[in-house]
Length: 104
Image 1 (cartoon, rainbow, N blue to C red):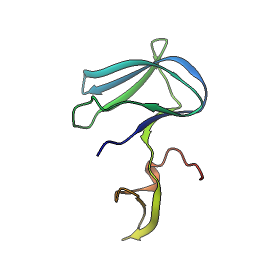
Image 2: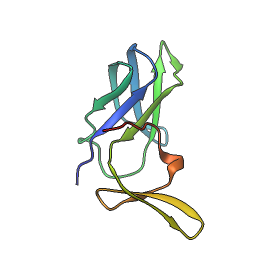
Image 3: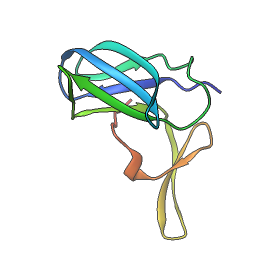
């Protein structure tokens, strides 16, 4: 079940280094040019696991860029005391994980 991942940027930024790390070990490093909004990125070559993501510009950490995946909200539920979005793939996520919303 491959998800399409996106880099979300509030502005156009050239020559950004995307670094994916497992602890101090760099798993993948690539240079990207970002446009404002959603920028598709191929992460299908990553091994299974949870990783830290860093964005570097001119040798310094870059703020205002996020990594996420796109999914359509099928429903909104309250489970216990938590508000959750159910995505088309059946996954439930907290609204606190939402980094970009668009309309159809």
